[in-house]
Amino acid sequence: MSAANNNPAGPRPPTHGRLVRKLVLVAVGMFGFGFAMWPLYNVFCDLTGLGGRGVKVADNAAGVQKSDRQIRIRFDATVNSNLPWVFQPQEKSATISLGEMSEALYLAMNTSDEAVTGHAIYNVTPPEASLYFVKTECFCFTEQLLQANESREMPVYYFVQPDLPEHIREITLSYTFFRNESSQGLALAASANDSTGESDNDGNEE
Image (tube, rainbow, N blue to C red; front, side, top):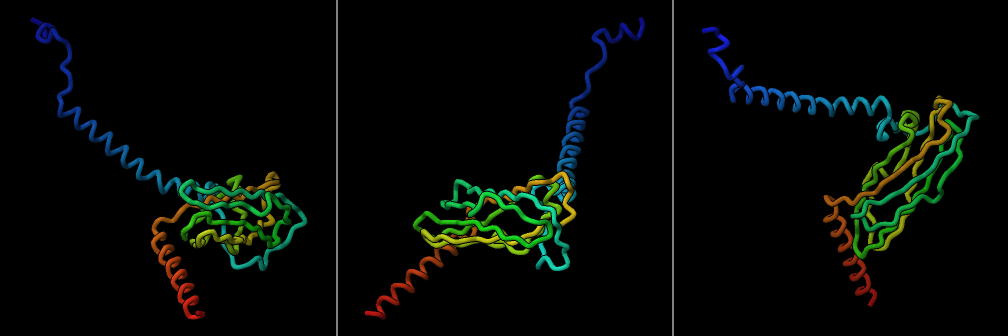
């Protein structure tokens, strides 16, 4: 009898052990690929300016040549739903000269009855423009503590490098404020100390 007749059911299916090994190898490969994607994404953001990653920080605009070319800067502001603040730019847009130090003012107000700490993240669009956008001072560099019902102007000092590509004629600078839960306890303690100090002063005046 031929070999074909000895196995009428056809080829034998792979054993469970072999299948498990293949699945494990696939899972390990996917994990390694995902692990490698994060540093590759960071490099991509640094090169393209995606997510504002290309924005530089400098002490001032000394040594930067001012250009006659002007562009428009649009200002945008949003607040995360967990933060009881009103946050908006004082002006919707401004026209600036490349290489010239400029200022933008934002206004933040805490509408709650307790002290709240917030932290702002920023973005510059188009992403390519962030490679030429330089900040010298910004409220986004540190946490911001606002007492109950307190309002505060928050400035940004910046300039745009004169070698900005010609096809970029408008840049949008956006900020989003988030509540900083890790600092909320310190904010409440500071608020309580302020209230205690006011009470002590009232008692001394009497």
